[in-house]
Image (cartoon, rainbow, N blue to C red; front, top):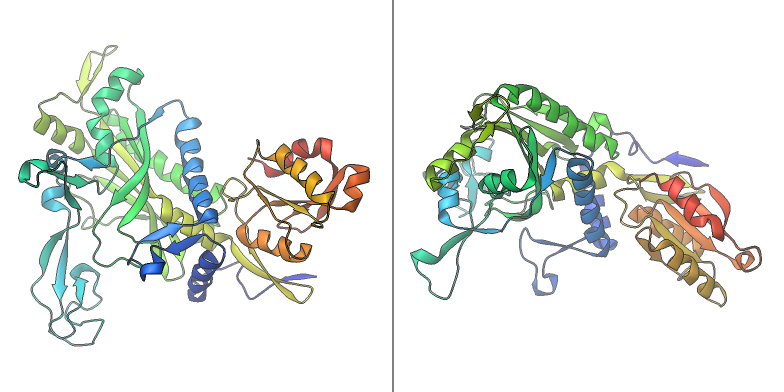
Length: 449
């Protein structure tokens, strides 16, 4: 008999206790580690372990599949992380990419003024009226390129992946034979010198973005903006996040960036409340015009059919890969009581699951490991697989449940004679006997990738 513990499988509101459960699970199962822990760690930096690295890769692959592979109007790009000051001057980051900071003169802590519940009250020590005047702090990481440290060698780590797509607009337009509406997609690292990082991997100084710049004729921008709002919300739901844990929130007029005529966030109900997963913005023609002005290059499109020449407008869906990973973990986590024992399950969509199949010989005594090795070799060309031959089979099932493996293949003593294996389902725990010769076909139908 199986029953849900508490209300963890159906959560109408935030569950503050879930945050600690996920953090503990990530450390225990090799999903996320604090960076450089043997040296005491490095604040707001994280390393993704064997399970986490594969999960993060699967999140990015699922995004790329949806945004590039399955579309004929989007191409990919992998632009440089380092960028010269001219790029960031044109984009406005050198002037505008700042946070207002205040320091408490009593406890010496630093805070973002715009994130204080009470602008006069220090949340650390409770002192009132002890903040310094707000100062602008630029969030970009600045470094030097080359052996000489002078102003001529000054470069920046990119704070977003978007600008690489704008400065390559002309190159891609000329080489890809695309025409508006078309998009340029990129997945890559970005860096922001956040003053108040926190909530595990939700806000960090080094993170990965999944961004699309979709270039459209100016008159079509409003309809494409609405299209991408629905499309991006659907992506999260299709990969297993319940719709009641997702929402679209339109920015108020005072929240909009100076270039945006409309921005909405896809938000997820985190344990601490609603938080942004992705922003979708109608950026107009601001970026291409800025780079055209500062570079002296024409960044426009000439429509030969109509004879019209115009600077495309841009719709930008920009998602955080690590935030998406965290949301998928939180949405997939559940506990159940099975035969008076607690079972922890990550009900991840098969496309996201770090391992699709686990091969488990019932015993470490030959010939089972040898046969299990043959089964593993059959599966590995098709899926990422795990292999485990230690401890009782029930404990091994629980380990695979906890890291989200959809299917376990058990090789038992009967398998030697009947050439069949047992396939166990993570979610239902149902077991089916399947001939080894038909195993790949059977698993393919079950995984629905």
